[in-house]
Image 1 (cartoon, rainbow, N blue to C red):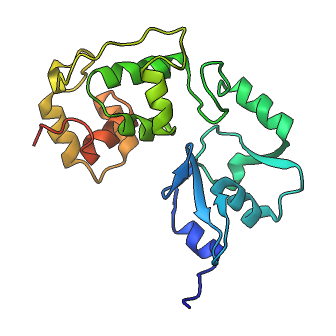
Image 2: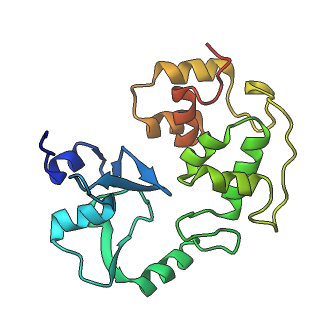
Image 3: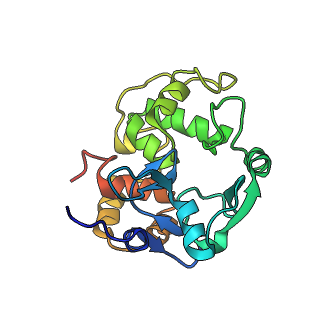
Length: 215
């Protein structure tokens, strides 16, 4: 049987370090990174907990690992701290992750996020792309766009695939999109700033999830 490489070795090769957050680049669950423990019966571990243990040792019984930066994929040990389960729930509530419109505390959605999801979906952005963009599961996107969650906010009617510059909320032209794709290797935050859009928008364009008709 092939020996499993040490967890620490497999872990750090999947982390993208920046001056701030260190972002997990592999599998996620509800926006949080996950990694296999290893071995035939190994568990699936949350990567921010793995990062804490690699840096500081075992997590005391009854304690959770929380994010100072409120960025679920972040595994920078300097951005993590220990707290009780009650601290975790209070932190989630303070940061807006436990709204009556959601089913769990990992969503981190605001009313503006929900309306942005509904608007984008009404203009043709897929549910899977939106789930990836906001770090939630596709089922939650479905419940948001059909009004089963966040019932207090208006549901958007599907307007069909009004693509590119014809979309009501379009900030970019087809020429902009081509220029963005030519800069696929550049820092995404810089590109987003240059074109006045979000990093999510840049990622969707470069990956081909949006503006598929532009070649």
